[in-house]
Amino acid sequence: CGGERLNVTNCETIRVLADLGVRQVTLSPELNLHELSLLCGASCLPTEIIVYGRLPVMLMENCVMKSAYRCTKGESNFELQDRKGERFALVCEGCRNVLLNSVPIYMADKLNDVINVHPAAIRLMFTTESKEQCKKVISAYQAAMNGKQPGILFDRITRGHFYRGVE
Image (tube, rainbow, N blue to C red):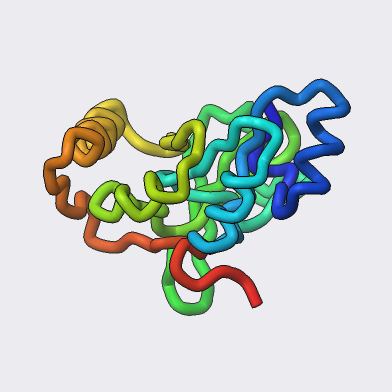
């Protein structure tokens, strides 16, 4: 399965990945609903769309925790704070760090917009959530899949690029 880090944004990329043996692709979270619809409709592979999660905003090859503190082998929770006071979770992947968005993409209450694009799958991407938070998110998406209005579970969310895309 070709993941979101492949940044799949067009049919040519999907064809090349299929030739390499990939059987399903996660489409780039930078695409808007119209662009996702075009790709899902023309793809030669099953497509997946991320509809929940704190997306990576930066990958760092140098371990921030080790440089600033000490190596914790991924066992501690760290955050970086920007000039506006936003807190971004820092996830350890060996000696590489992934900086996650300060707010999650949340589309449970707008899931029909995504379903109308006709992806083969949708993905809930859990990173820093507690077991209880995971259960609430899964329940919200299950409710949406069953035609019920799930509401919004968080004080702050993002719709990602679903309604705006990248210019």
